[in-house]
Amino acid sequence: MSIKENYTITVLGCGVMGTAVVSAILNAEFSPYPSKIICCTSREESALNLKKKLNHEIIEVSYGSEANSKAAKKADIVILACKPYMYETVLSQAPINNGSLLISLLAGVTTKELQKYSVNVAKVMTNTPAQYGCGTAMVSFSDPEAEEKYGDLVMKLINPVGLAMKIPEKNMDAATALVGSGPAFCLLMMESLIDGGVRMGIPFAVAKDAAAKVMEGTAKMVLETGDHPAALKSKVCTPGGTTIGGLLKLEDAGVRGSIARAVEEAANISASFAKK
Ligand SMILES: NC(=O)c1ccc[n+]([C@@H]2O[C@H](COP(=O)([O-])OP(=O)(O)OC[C@H]3O[C@@H](n4cnc5c(N)ncnc54)[C@H](OP(=O)(O)O)[C@@H]3O)[C@@H](O)[C@H]2O)c1
Figure 1 (tube, rainbow, N blue to C red):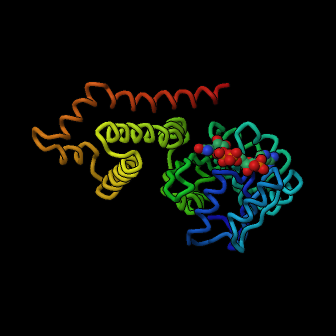
Figure 2 (spheres, rainbow, N blue to C red):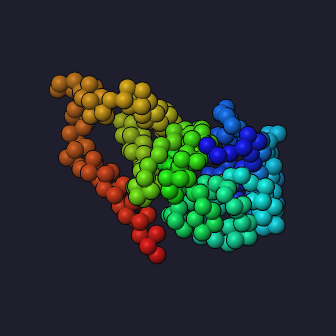
Figure 3 (tube, rainbow, N blue to C red):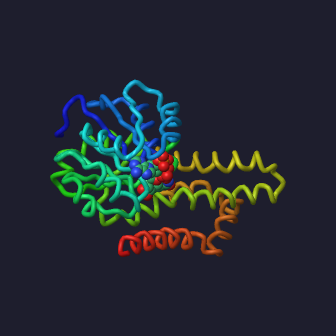
């Protein structure tokens, strides 16, 4: 790992995702730990809100392009978390120090495009549950040298959002679909469970909490046992029972194929953005 002990992270564009990553780092313990995190926004109002939200001794907050540039000069690591369309402007106003690591949270921008601004680039695709420490993050590196130098540190910095996994960059469009769009797909399934409960007489508030907990508990079972979902599903199908009856209705409607195709469609759309 090539990072000094007292290193500084600068977050260029500390909005929803940037704040989620910084909050997760603040709640985690690992070594080497950053001695300073400078969070940059464009407006004073968001900087003030951020100051209240991330109230911690290692946090500094700043706003505006001049402050971005000063913060980038101090950075050993830059986390880029602005909107994808603005990254060229932000990085040209705040050049990254030679040899510093750039960690990008941007959807659809490749490490090759970002290597114009830094030799060492890590690309992270995470999702909104990261705000609650329950995010998923897929990580890839610009090249084997960047991974060799910074791989361990990047995983230590990103894993606190929930769960971080390394993947080759060629899988990033699929990751954008599965991880980035996945929460919306799960919410649609959750809504359907709620609708079913309400249809059969359960009050909405109760059905909502029950459906959310069912999804959380099911996910935990898969993560803790490591079993294939089909094996776990089979265990809850009593012969002639309610579950197998419901499952066959879902299979008749092609729900399994539709959800898999939704991931395929989202991945293809993500890939088409990169071609533009
Ligand atoms: N949200 C998601 O579900 C999700 C999922 C996966 C990946 N991502 C990726 O995460 C990135 C950030 O998305 P987000 O939802 O966190 O966006 P966001 O909440 O709108 O945050 C953008 C941040 O950039 C700041 N900013 C704008 N112009 C700036 C400038 N010139 N210099 C410094 N900061 C500037 C904004 O500050 P002001 O508020 O002061 O303007 C804001 O803090 C995107 O690239 C997106 O592709 C998002």
